[in-house]
Amino acid sequence: MKEDFLHYLWGAGKIPFGAMRTTGNLPVMLVDKGVHNSNAGPDFLNASLYIGETLWAGHVEMHLDSSSWYAHEHHLDPAYRNVVLHVVWRHDREVYLADGSLLPVLELQGEIPRHFLEKYHSLSGMQARFLNCSGQLQDYPLVQWYSWFDRLFVSRMEHRTAAMHRLDPALRTHWEALLFRAVFRYMGARVNADAFYSIAETLGIEQVRKMVAAGEDLEVVLHGLAGFFEDPEAGEEVSERKREYHYLCKKYRLVPERVVRPVFFRLRPAGFPTIRLSQLARIYGDRKGLFARLLLCDTPSAMRSVFEVSASSYWDTRYTYTSKGHKARSKRLSRERIDLLLLNAVLPILYAYYKYRGSDKMHRVVEWASAMPAEHNKILFALKDEGVPVGNAAHAQAALELYTNYCSKNKCLQCEVGQFIIGG
Image (cartoon, one colour):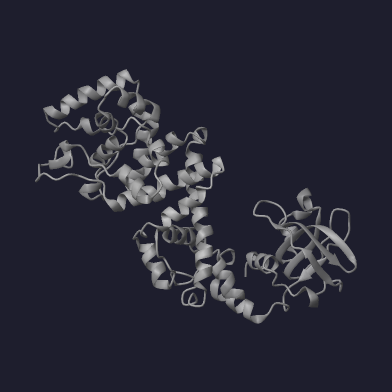
């Protein structure tokens, strides 16, 4: 058993206070459970409760064993001076506060209904199953799934933007610059995310605007920063591009030494960095900012149209500067890649922007994602097999948030599905 089970019992109102007494034989009646504290300090803050006939206001601390109070050195920590109740599973030692008074203890062992314990043990701990709740999802109502998904989707959007802000604290409300780096990062996919991000960081959106306004070849700059012109086997045409790149490097004072070189291994040709960076050059070749263009869109289809680009015609017959030519075909950015870009880079930033502005359009982000098809990956296939109802892109993002931050971390008691299984 873990302490999170005690937190769940207290927070979900599963403790039968009417029949319980402290170890000092005083009745306990809860008035306000307080606020669950996920940081350092007591587990529930600012609770209020009657112990005997006295109304107490203060904090509540929880342990499996009351002796843990001393093991964790709470007796030396001023943050615990206002604890008014010690909730434990087993009472094995009296606890005294700094003023010498005895801390009231509520012992739960033997007081919690057996079915709560059985359900808890069926969920807790690492098990040889994809989900701890495997085979137990069939009774969870669909309407509750969708309600839980709405909150998980918002959480995923906020986690995405928080991650972007941690990388670029100075760009917190510079939406065009934030989007620029996010789009590059997700165009790099898992293999080249850091490399593409370093290119965006080195270049910067303001430099891109100047280059586009001056009619410079943005593809040459991106490929030069990526190091594609350094191959000794490249021909004269590449040498010309290399000379142009070095000229632009000096003109715009670029520092290529900070760039992480993209790689080609474990990638299909359509995803080679030469092709993706060429597509990015076409996306950012418009003089009007990408973020400004997206703000004018009111449907997923309109947003997709902004990213419906092809690599330059130079790449119609090749994938790298040294590869043999093939039959001419346009290297378009696929619908699936565009949707992933929208979900992982565009929508989180739009959500953060609308929230920052206090706009009602914040809720439209959920609607847009709900109108898009769910992506396909191994985790989502496995979740569907378990009975998780993934019907669109918003559900898929919510399900990934659920798996990443709850299922894979065994946080069943913080999950609404887990709480339903234990106490439903």
